[in-house]
Length: 307
Image (tube, one colour):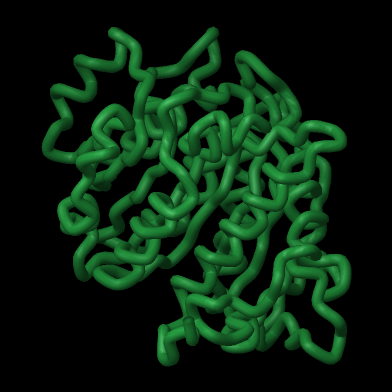
């Protein structure tokens, strides 16, 4: 099944920059990249509107052979990429409706949606069809910020309120990892919703127990939202609010790997990349993260690399 109302990039232009002979048709692809460069409520550094294009360009340099899985994992699932269309940020709720429609179309086609943001305010739109589809959905949230404000600087759907808007749905729980910024105004909501919100603080990362982190995800459908400022700012400076004290590459992958083992990742977004001209490392990190999320969603480890 294809997407009659959505435009699709050629394999060479899309995620991973695949030669035509190595790419599957959109009808056969199990994963679909949805670029959505919303930039409307950034409150420090800007540039997230250019994030999806930078991730797609960098993905053409990602090595297709994944040594963890000992193979070219994309061949097991196939990937299609929607056209990176300009996003009107003048009305965030309207933009989120557009994103929800795109995500719904991908889900209804039986595909896995992976959204490339854009600021973190994309998540309440991207996740909407998942909340309608899965009664027991749980959110796995990587971030430096709790994002539990009930709006920020006059914007109800601010990037600083992304998780609060997700939690407007009264039954969905969330596991947040890497948090090292929370405001006093967010604390009452956190305290009132301890039964739904589990925070793993960045200050405690040396003592994180991965089995404990992923325990609430066991046997459940998981939506993964990854704000790139969750990484330590020395690793990810290309984001609107870079923060010290964050996790590093292997720490993030260990949690994603464990989540995929105990539950089922059904959709994801990667957000808050604000590219720095002439500095490609953060763009490449974000693109490789996307590939690893897909690999841990669809592939199984069968053969260990020879050391």
